[in-house]
Image (tube, rainbow, N blue to C red; front, side):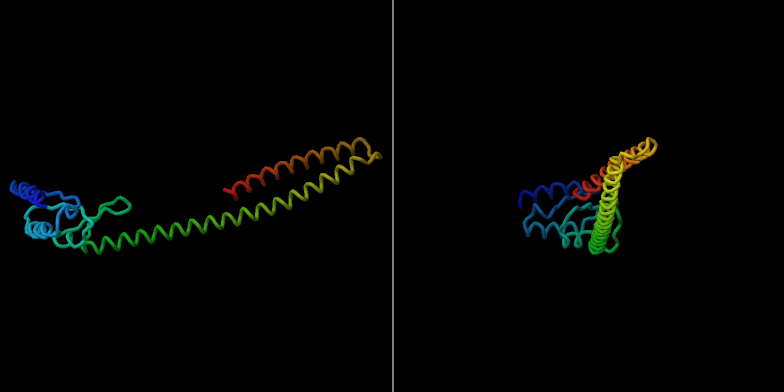
Length: 177
């Protein structure tokens, strides 16, 4: 404490116009801190103080400026109380936006589950259609034109099933993520 007091005294003997103090209350004992508060309270120059010590700030500062969460610097006429209110409001806004994000994620998940069910039903229908077309191909009494038509329909059914399976797989992966 004595060493810090001496350093501060030497600094103030030069009569600076501006003092920049970063967490000054961390390095002083109670006696030195009380003397520092008395000295700074009567200091005629400009003080720039960065501190978490609310009592110290309110005792030695006439004007408050705060660095807010959105990286803006704002004049705080009501002092530390106003800063705390703004910080709490920002934290509440952030919590609300996180809740909205969670609810939109839940809605998205519900939609993915609906899409997955729809695709599963479509896959089942496509598999039934492929089976039916396979049975029709086994009919030996078919004419060449009918055989070509069934073969074309079977190819289209396989393509449809493959597309549905790819879409189903993607939705399943999205749900698992």
